[in-house]
Length: 194
Image 1 (cartoon, one colour):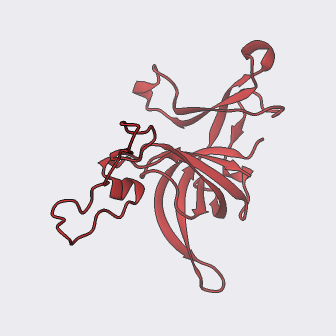
Image 2 (cartoon, rainbow, N blue to C red; image 1 turned 180 degrees about the vertical axis):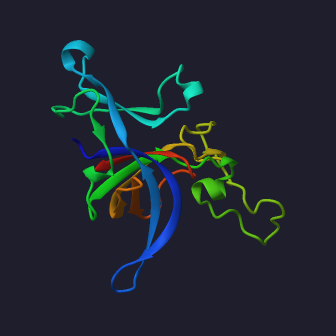
């Protein structure tokens, strides 16, 4: 089975190693996941495996049986439909990359969104402390594409690479991953071994 699992972000905490150093970590409720469908080149045009995660309430099972369905592009995986995977596919100390949807911040200005420092606080400035300043250039008479401006921030697919699995709780299907992971509490995360 490939080193891959789906999970939901729970909370951040800190643990201490043997030397007493504090390690910031995120608790993830991961798996078990079930291979629903295996796609191949002859029938579907590409190779992939579709996984289901999280069981729905019985009243909602008419729609679909699983809360989340994700497809992973794997070639020569050896996985067949109906195969299960849980946190035991990983070991403590494994390096992983974690993908998810980041927290949505709504409409934000250039200082928060792009790190602009704003205008000076003196010399006749009155209301332009957090403004972007000039956005045009001479001669062309238009604003260039890609100019950094205020706008919607967050709610983007984000991948954090090279994280370490600190602890595994097989009884409760939980992973403790070092560092901060994208999203709010309850965000669906894709955890892949590197």
